[in-house]
Length: 471
Ligand SMILES: *Cc1c(COP(=O)(O)O)cnc(C)c1O
Image: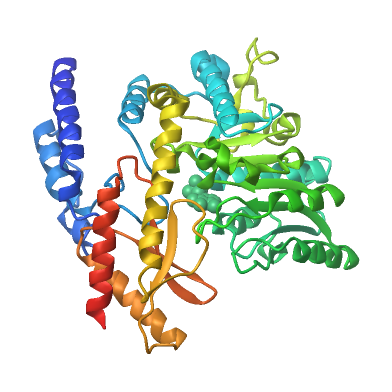
């Protein structure tokens, strides 16, 4: 492809993108293909000679698109969103065009300095104290790993980095409702899954601080070494909010590292009404939230904030001869702020997003998403055969269909599983499920950038009809 063909094809691709967004509601939200369908249609050998853009693009439309689940559809109500927006897409296109590998300041000073500034903007936007230093990671899973490794190194006086483990008995605490990434990170960090203590949650699915204190005391009595607590602001199942203030006091009392996982709900902190959740933030060591979930920024973009940046850098720093530069002492080399050496220029799309929407624009969309779900919540509450099984803290409802005459949990679980399958097979909307206290619940989460009340009204209609036609 020469530059003239590139120019022509790029215009075509952009037109395709605009058409796609115009027509996105016409696609089945959840891809309806069966396992292997796409693989079977792909050529088993790579082409020996280059093919035309037309042919590749045709195959993209005919072979690839049927196997795509449309995360940017306003009828996508599954998982948590990984939303996007037009300014973000443009930022991502330019990032691809620059193709810069932003491992250190010298490899693109603008990338390092824009990352520093956009992270600072975000910290201010969500009300973090100014002592926090931000860095963009790929995902919250990585950010939490980075946090636990820093805690581990601080606690071992950086000995484990040097000599490996020598019989330390670290313990990490999170709620029973915490995200699976914490368990994965504890495994990777060498702490061991058995040393992740899952603290019981209350009837709102939030961590019970007195149980946390009890677990720590028991571990100390048993000669183990409490290391860190991970508190969740917005669990993945039900968006439960752990009581940070009380947890942070426990962390302080026992001198434990405290990490906050606000991967999804962190975006809601742009709104003053949710700031009380941050009470205790003065005693928090690190904090993560994902603009790639609910702040209109393409995956991936997860912002990690840490108070003790010296400890972070000491944990990850490397200085091989070939990476030494004359400016190392007075610039930020983000390769030392996490796992990766090579880094994408992720700050660019974030900068496009924040500048395009403005902080007020971001607030108003997030507020609208929350209001929309609160409206559906009221409608759901007015129907006797639907049940909401967790507090609706933001824009997620966990509910089930519960008609008269069925009281057996297994039977209800089975019924709701069937209903969800039926809903998703319509292709009109897409939802996923979780289990809360053993109950199978459907999750309706509305956070796609362009979702409106009309989409939710229609979803609610489909949910009611599908459920009532099952029984
Ligand atoms: C989504 C989520 C994660 C994991 O996010 P990734 O960025 O995909 O690693 C972690 N914690 C919570 C609470 C989440 O909702």
